[in-house]
Image 1 (cartoon, rainbow, N blue to C red):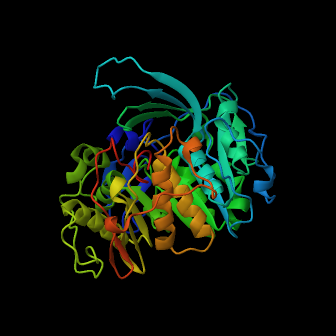
Image 2 (cartoon, rainbow, N blue to C red):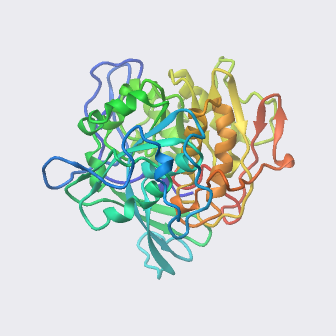
Length: 457
């Protein structure tokens, strides 16, 4: 999975990551440490929306509080998976505050090298955006789901929302603003790897004031889902308004207050994002430097400690140093005060850590077609199960199967399973059990296997 896939693109996000309650840390786009030193944050997903005037609501969804599933279309869009669930399957409401894009998906034999021009084999426009993807995934897994976001007043807006409404998502909280709809340019190679460049467009309008207009639905949600493709002040305000559980998928890693990171329950990241955020919280590297260092980004951070949760708890030592290092990143994030963390690990599954301990969750092996949006499928499924009252570990066991299912189809939202679709299972040989800890498998080649963390995790 390419770093371009995970990092996102755009202008620097406003906000801070401050460690240890650092009041008045460095300004916009900086990381504050306990000593007050600032470190530049990785480029986030924000930008200007041209034009002015009051936003208006997008049509096509039920009003807040209505039965969202009752408004789902009988016939899904071309390529959409079957099995869209009826509303009422779960008791809690999932509110997703996030990006809505149109994905321009270009297929190519292999991804181009820097400076290289290749001839593509196809192109299609599909609905996307991390927020919309996660909302569709949650709704298809049975959650009553509300989308809070924005589209532009351009021709692309009509292509951005059809699968939201057809999946039963309440889109009455999606506003239309002057300017372009968000756009993601996705390149997918024959090996199922992808690169993604995002142009924020209308998503830049989903800041503090826009979120405040929907405070009522946020306060009533069982789970509020947030990502890094909207302005930092929108993420922060939504997290603070929530009275239920906050699922923060900090992808891409953007500058938000450390206080908000600590409100996440769970914080969901992939391996790359986990290292970037940890480096920022520790103040050992700038996030920009951490992005260049990759796996060595936290080399100066003490990964293992005297904490009982300082390493893998399943007693095995044959699954590789990478798993131990990933578990150590999760542990370090917990030690910064995050109540629970889920680290997605590609075909190796996920690591889950909360008050019950540290757990390794295996993912099914599948033949990958397109890994785009698999991480969003994971997050949406995780939110749906949490809203239904499942424990974080129980939810993660379902989410890895949903993510694995999604890579077997092309596109993002069209590949997400409904409750009527059969999810792939983890074979007994692929799972090493020790009490309630499921051992993850080592990653296979991207051409043959993929899972929930691959794609835009």
